[in-house]
Amino acid sequence: MSLITKEQTNSSNADFDWLEKAISENYIKYYDYTKFTNRKEISSGSYGNTSCANWKDSDTVMVLKYSYGLTIKEIVNEVKHYIYIK
Image (cartoon, rainbow, N blue to C red; front, side, top):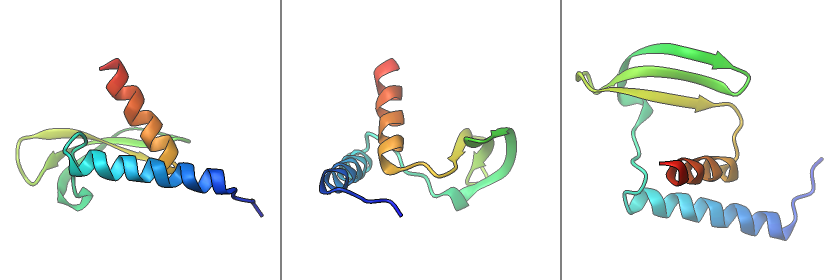
């Protein structure tokens, strides 16, 4: 059994709040996964899988990343890392 400290809970809440704010202010665009068609797997591993797919039956092709078991903190760190190197 894992013991979650108050500090970890506060950190998780802060990360969740950051992610929600980034989506609501359009820094991160949210796409409904069910609206993608013609999904084709690009790669797969212990981290998760990566696919390409069309958005809403259009010619717009996007890359989808599905990660196994990531925490909100790990997602926020990955997004911040992407923003930093972009």
